[in-house]
Amino acid sequence: MIQVIRGVLNSMRTPAYFSDITRLSELRKDAHPSIYSGDLTPQQRANPDHSSDCSHWCLPGLPDTWNQLFYATLFF
Image (cartoon, rainbow, N blue to C red; front, side, top):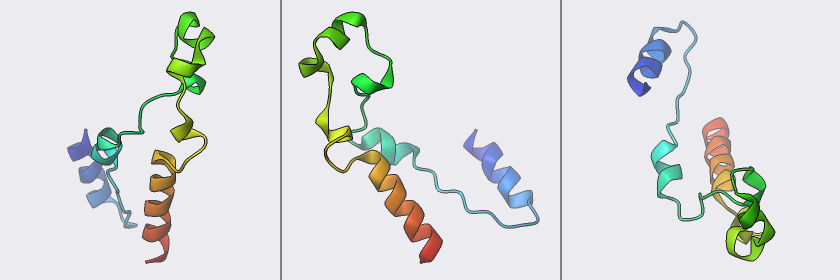
């Protein structure tokens, strides 16, 4: 799939930049879903102390890293 995307980007008249963050996202320890993702069973939702993760909502996490990379791409 990545090869197809790169092929399309290379054939475009207007240049576009592709930043593949897949591996970055897979390797992040805090990139796991939380109770807010909607993918939990009713039992997991009933006991959020064992299913929730404050790292997504209280601390900087993976979306913040994406935003920093996007900002750096735009301005540097």
